[in-house]
Image 1 (cartoon, rainbow, N blue to C red):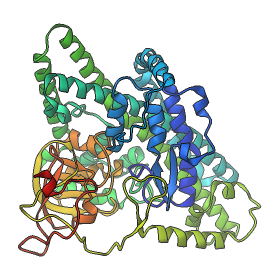
Image 2: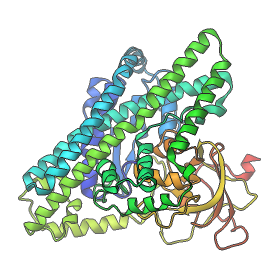
Image 3: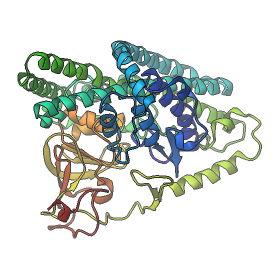
Image 4: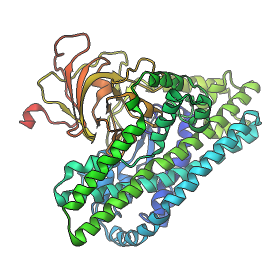
Length: 541
């Protein structure tokens, strides 16, 4: 969940996600008829729920997703899982029961009708989130505690509907992607996959980069940019983080960097190139087909153009609504300080929703906050595996430690997942968060744990991207394809690379090769394993 639910959550932030997240998954899958109506009831057992928190970090339950994906037609459930989670049901847990086979028939009839109206529905949701955000930005700073609390809960209800729409459309995107993969397999051109699922243009993410470019190169007003995009910011899936409207220095620094870049770095130039590449690839595919096969191929490609770009629309909507909850929470915190119950308004993020709602909460809130801060600080020193069964085995990480393992020049490259084609060589820049872009040099290869929309402008400066976790349909993969830069995911870059390492990124093969280590003229010794699950050099041989 790290792409959206960022890092070690504060208690209030997770309470919000827990409030609307579980409900949203169930509503979204029910909208697609993938699950029966009874599925809307949240089960008591955590093992049957979609999400849970472990050592402060949100995680998705793959078994719960497989129950819903079992009703997807053909192999689209497997394609969706691989696209979203980079995982496969190797244990055979997605068993086809009579219920799932019957539901597949229902889904086959229903989905075409649902797809016809999904773009208009998302447009309405997106317009409503914009209006709600603007209204609450104006109203909430002077609101009393009762009104702020009411607006907080209203935002959570609206976010549930928006996340449900995101779940539904992401599932459709996974199915469209699976259909394109099957088409490419039939014509023997799987090499064109990454080109065909990009180059759609005018996504919300690219609009952010283009608007920032306009501010930098055409004298636009930063305030106007923030009035439109200010709900984004570093770690925007953590309620206690500061969005750009509150702290504009990351935007100002990025704008300054853009001013020094060449004119052909305009994101609209990359967008046009990606569109042209996709159109050429589509023409190549269709030329190899005849008759009914060509007609089917046209339909599959047209569906991809219509559905895949929609994946980021609802996400922008619930990110904006989440910022409304952030505004409301800070107003509530200020009132609790005025009432003498908290020392700092930021302490509100260490309370729960129930504690905020109850004016007569017994005990000293300061003691509660201090204890929870200590727990969160201890969780920040813990790293979790990418996947696990039952309870994860936490690994204590010293954040100031030098990475203990890497690859030597000449060794087989560690293997990740190639999600945006191309090969680039350059200096790695390991970035923990997008809060301070001043040290990032255009042309660096961005190395990070995960990304959200606040990272998009870094992609414009980067020559390539390496991301710890994600799949072909993750946020970072989509943006990289639209900008035409190589990207590798599911490679532990933040653990095995240092800023200044010279690396080669192959976004087609999914490899990252260390050429030289920072501060040395030769390779560092290979002292440890590579990406989890990747084959050794002997196994490859």
